[in-house]
Image (cartoon, rainbow, N blue to C red; front, side, top):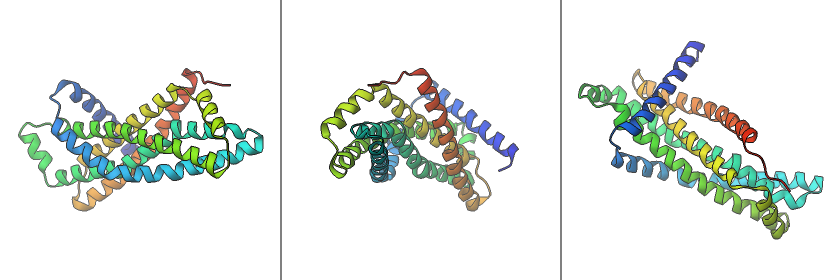
Length: 255
């Protein structure tokens, strides 16, 4: 993607984000469309999210357990592994699945409507596609991403306990005491905020690329591929920024 096209795309994504934010508070809420889209997103992301959270928790627990064992801090293995899942792994896992499954589906749906000239017909009838089609999908992704993140966090904590206490022979008491000593409610809030913002961003990117698709079915396919790649890139950049700001503004608990 050329530099000019990249800047134009980022500008279009920012403009659509502003339009969605305005439409969500100034127009009638499309409740039925929101429910249908939320149910669809849940149906395509719930099982993959749970399945992905298990190896995420396993890898983090085993790596952290090995490192803390070498440092003589085995009692903190569970707490550090769970904190990594709550702060970083769970929001990223939820966001990647939302972007890969729901974002691509949104882009494909809107792109198909675009090349069939349904979007143009709506505009001729005075119906704003951003209000009628984009806003419910973005809000549905925002809502489902937060719900999926909660499921992934629960699975990650359970996985961290299993691999730390059962597999590596750690102490259940040390796991619970160190976790409650190091973790805070702010860690959960930042994880939920990340998941919601990531889900919103993935839906906006998918909607923008879908509505700007052209060139027939092949153009829709290219738009879907670009939407997934752009969403992944923006998610990782935004995650780095949010994490850096969080550690600067929120004091961390310690023993």
